[in-house]
Length: 233
Image (cartoon, rainbow, N blue to C red; front, top):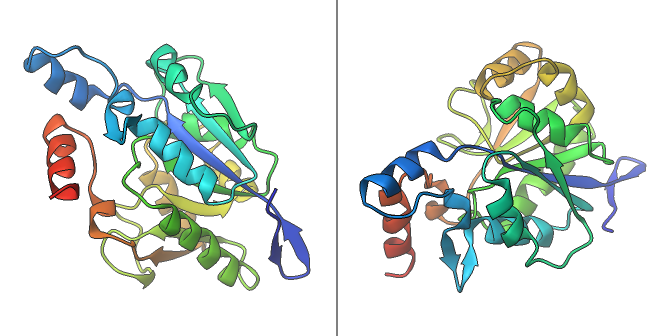
């Protein structure tokens, strides 16, 4: 375990990876091309490792104390990939029912966490480096001593303290207990909840990526293919 100092207190971090979605845009593309339809999370990403494997390994390498993976749709296929990773920090959580929005997946991960602070990551964010995940945690630690109502988030446009939370999403680092209060009993995307927290006085600090390819979203098959072409060019 890797304890980190906040003020006079030592704390731990939980990585929460949401991997419960329908992957609808990718499955639609695969079907239109006559390819087997499956979740994008089990597509090959790098050196024989799938998207979800790569994401999990990078979060684990960022030094989290536990790694909670929230599963729903395609859980049987995804579990086969997770089992390739031998690390006792991994814990699986299941959505029931399956048809829920991101806020419910996050909530199910949050209530299973043993830490006060969390690094929240989408399962398809395999293109984000371990270094960027570490930077999110360290930027949070640098600021949380003075202001506990804090998010550090991978930037979308601006870097530094933000005047708006529009278009923000994962990955981010924040206080688990504060987030639970805003996310409980919600069934929505993340952004409306972030707007509510921003109005309540939360500070949002955007961290720069290590590589511009980390800002690419892998949603459709063309995104997946173009990412590989750029990455191996």
